Length: 323
Image (cartoon, rainbow, N blue to C red):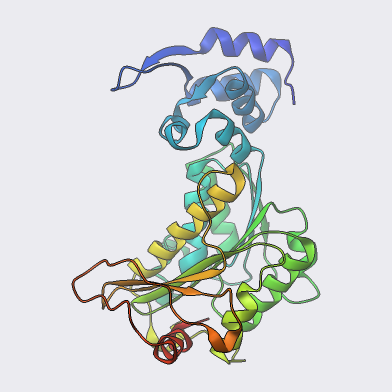
């Protein structure tokens, strides 16, 4: 990937020395300079940012990313394509966080429009957006956050006939959906196309998430436990306070970052289940037969945590909140 010598020269001329609070020295380039170079050389801002990083010059907007994923990690993010299925409570927050992180290409899928009962938890929605397309509003939001990100909005319904076309170029697909049937369609398509799928679901004060790589049994296992064919998510009955989708969305985004950059360990072959009323975080193993699933020894997060909860009780909790 190259933008030609004029861009390289401008990058070198406009970069500046920067010293972190920890006395680490770096060359950085500000947003105004990136935009100027992009305009001057008729090159996309994302390509300019990648070229800067290849020269060891960090766009200032990504400085706080570099300590965790490094320059190579940021380049991988900028070169990546991520699909977000659903742009509601989960998907809207996922979209915003991915844009801030510097994902190069976002594909966002949702046929819905904002209604008043979205306002309590859907971060992209404002009172002025009521009645507007969710994906169109999301595109506008992303462009205000990070103009270098390429956004492809898909204002269509996800079904078994359309999903392959929507996700075929993705490096990872994230779950911002609200019902079992569509999640299963997406999970099956991801497995067939060998694309990692990060699952998340919410209900009231509870949420769950995990990463499913091609060939994993993960989503089939939890669907078998839930035993539901309902097209309507349980959140329509339990409701959702604003923080629940924000927490699960953030965790999904962290998994996507790890998948793309290759850092850290993935939440794979197990389901993370969070109950914010009980202040518990449980892990449920999916590595055995479905009828043998029992919880891991969970991490203690409060004095009330019970890591010895029996399998049937854990299955009941999962069934009550899943999808």
